[in-house]
Amino acid sequence: MDTEPNVDKSATSIVDQHAKLTVLGSTVRESIEHVEVFPAPANVDIVRFTTDELSSMCPVTKQPDLSHVVIEYQPLDWCVESKSLKLYLWNFRDRAVFAEALAAEIAGEIMHSAKPRKVTVTLTQRPRGGIEVQAVASLGG
Image 1 (cartoon, helix red, strand yellow):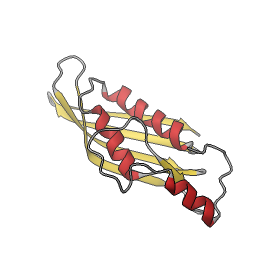
Image 2: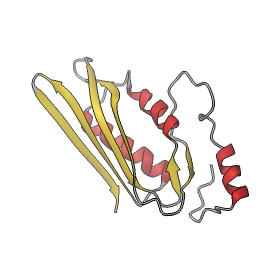
Image 3: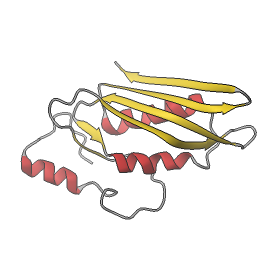
Image 4: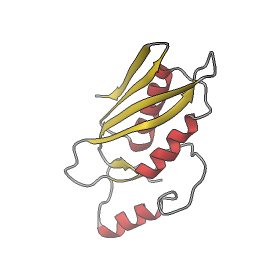
């Protein structure tokens, strides 16, 4: 993956960058370790992903935790490809992790892979025991 800060957005370069996407257009039946990115189009200020399908496990009881997550970032040179994000989030299905650590890890992955100006992940864990947990992790500025 090209990580140069100034992306060549000519038609040839964009086709070359899209060729580096390995998940989109492929049949993938397992989780992946990192999201994939593509060159950010001009004039896109904010990208927001929302899902109610994030699952993980409580690190103490090993019971399933279901969460709503909103991932919002301000792209600089790269955008996150959505299918790769879905497959990345599958990583957490069998992982024992607290909501706060999960929000921070997802924010870190977006910052590392897409290098946006700023990323904010808001994770709302569905109530268990009558308590809803909301964790917000932000990086950049």
